[in-house]
Length: 123
Ligand code: FES
Image (cartoon, rainbow, N blue to C red; front, side):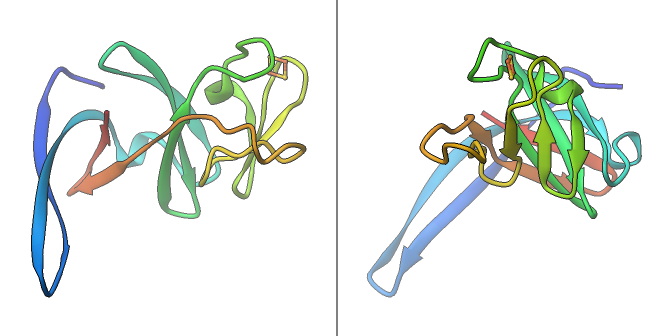
């Protein structure tokens, strides 16, 4: 069951000249067992509906709002890494958010972290 629990992870980027540390807030949205491989669900992250998918054990999160007419992406059928919008069939790669017919059209993607049995999505 999703909860209001938040966690902050430090992202460290850098090279030999130094590093930059940025902080992102991640929201616990599900248990890993609640989204089996090949399935998805709709979660809410800081007020945004987000579609969370499990592709062969790896989790991905994209906007739940289809770029066509706002259909619920998280309720679409997942075939490997491709989800089909349940409204009119637009297809997206959940790893990148890219529309298959027009890769320039992309759903917003969200970073996903796994901590134990918990799935966190960053916003
Ligand atoms: S709303 Fe998604 S394909 Fe039309």
